[in-house]
Image (tube, rainbow, N blue to C red; front, side, top):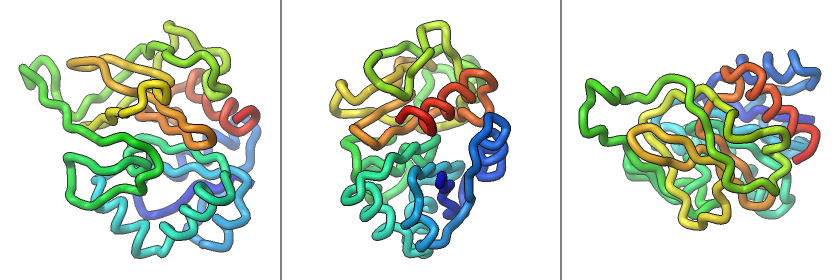
Length: 205
């Protein structure tokens, strides 16, 4: 069972619809018992870092997620804010993240806001940095995804970086540590390449 974790932030319906379109059933839920039964988890997110952590705490999901990810080793995919919450902290707020990965979220500071508006919205090509990940099956440097974000992650362990993209400067677009993977872009808005990534996660990851 694929469970899309509902903590009050994110394009939950869009992700579920995309999964169903490519042939996979998914459940959107904030119920702890449902999360405990999941074979794979997706943590989406659109919004602020601190609000994301507050919402997870208020729904008592943090201990459940820690058990599923750190003890049970259930595969999880973080999308946009969801991936940022995997890290240690963010320049956007003051609360600590889930601390599953050694990464921090940093704010884009464009030299010219007219040339480089923030949030960064639009399509960008990605550069493959780790060809060994099952999440990247079928991807190359001609692959592009849709981004919508004001903050980006900086991953301390460069071996955990799967993809890089460029806006103002190079930034980490996807990371993976064992069964924990995250993407800064929105696969549910990225057409065929988004479908491929979600298929890879469900079928091969």
